[in-house]
Length: 621
Image 1 (spheres, rainbow, N blue to C red):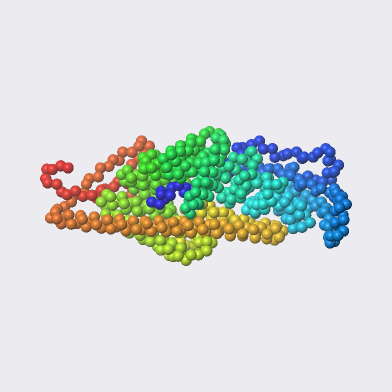
Image 2: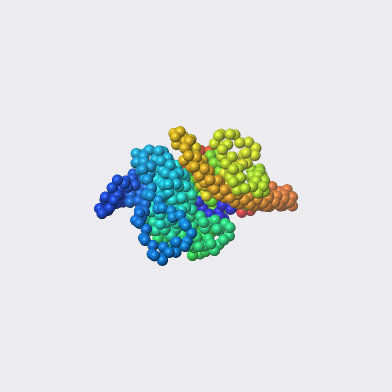
């Protein structure tokens, strides 16, 4: 059951977007223009950069760029060289001395600022791009690029804006637009489906001091980065480097105040870091940290809807990890308690039913385990990927001497999953480029979106797709690629002046580069996931063959025993069961029909097949 053996590699909640009231309350964005009285005449006639207006969004208000004027050029006369220097110059070869450039004309940039203020974002972006194309305006390029990034953000072209902000940040911390550009990364992270595209960028500036209002969000995002990095290092067996990353997670969480909105999410990451240690102290600390997350995310009146939803998701993930942690330490009844806390129909509910079946099996509650598997096999979840469910079902039947049924279940498992294994073998043996592995999955997605009926090999590929996308990180990277493609299409829906502009062409090239990079990353992740599933399927198929062998051996033993007993009839043990249920439930025999309100409530009445030899008359067992 590889899903439980790698329980540490759990899905992390992508819960970056904290509420506006929590993150940015009290942030003064309408700052006054900074002008010194002594410079009034000198600066007369020049316009200061336009004040940033608040965007129409709920979660955050981007910062103002007031007061971020470019450094002034020193236009004073150069100092007179000394006499000794003059003599040396006479002897030196004649040189052309470049004159200092005059101050750049801000008029075109001011046009962009004015258009932005009027919410004409397409025209504002084009005007800022025009400044960037003029080498004579080099001193204004950083401001123009920052201005263009903001306009693209307002147009909903978040990945295009991210590319421009990255170029602004590359100038270094000494640049006046560095800090506001860094802050805008947070706003983009709230808009993109996958925050990991922002994490790599943020991690480059780990030593930069952020404004206090963003400090805790930055620490949380940086901890997220180190969890993802640490997991990747564990997969390639670089244990020492992974230890450093998870140690950094623990350090960063200590810096976040307990009453901060980001603390519960950061505490969850800390719990994962302790869980990874796989030691008694790590177990104790992980359990306490997960319980702390549960306490911190209790439903309370007055919470905003989006905050309540974030807390609910995080709470369920904490329950799942508590269950897995106890299961890993063979505390099966405690594990079942926490699996039972997962709300019916929620995201991790099916996973919790499947994993709870293994815990039930361990303590001999076969009826409950099989009841959960009835839910998993319902038509409502036909596309879900739980190959081990059939193996578990076969094992339970085998241990209850239902050998014939066990063999039938194993035949069904082989019929369903042997083609998947064969396809994986074929795909992985080709040693394709990383992007090619992603393109295989992309083609299946395209056919599904277009409603093309899958047949033959395509059905197998659909299973491979579901199999690969069960990995959360790969699924989110895939969503980022789809989001990038949607953004590329969005340019074609703009007015012709913007659609056919040099700016649109430049952004299209940039987005193609981002897409290629993400596809390579997704391809590597897809190959790794497919390889892991190939190994897991091979193990399950081998286990199935072993159970088949044991089943055949047991059947042979019973036949031989029956012959030795002169053909006496064996008796099947009576199965004792009760129809008693809770006051709010009703016992209803299952007749092959599935109803949504019954899912997750099935109790399987298992007739044991283990046989007793007929007893002499009058003898009671």
